[in-house]
Image (cartoon, rainbow, N blue to C red; front, side, top):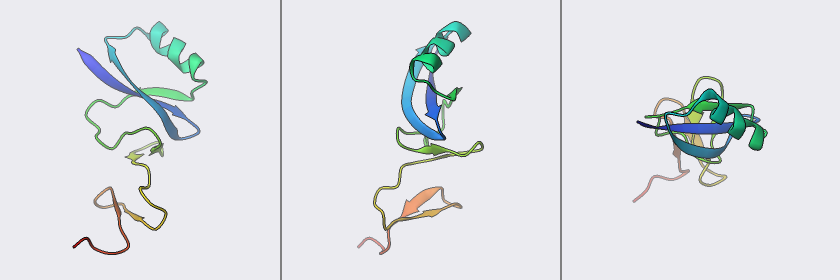
Length: 84
């Protein structure tokens, strides 16, 4: 069964990999290849994306534009003006 894994370095998701039942040896290989701090199973977490962040509890998608603010409750970036 395929699972999605996030490659994390300095709290930033630098890659997303899909494995089919990987061994710990394979995960360690990719961790070394990317000089990553962590490779973790994120299957089902739609908030994981390259350029996003991991704070140790949850993922946050990358900020779409500098003026957008993050809403913790909805776990979404909110534009400065409502869309029409």
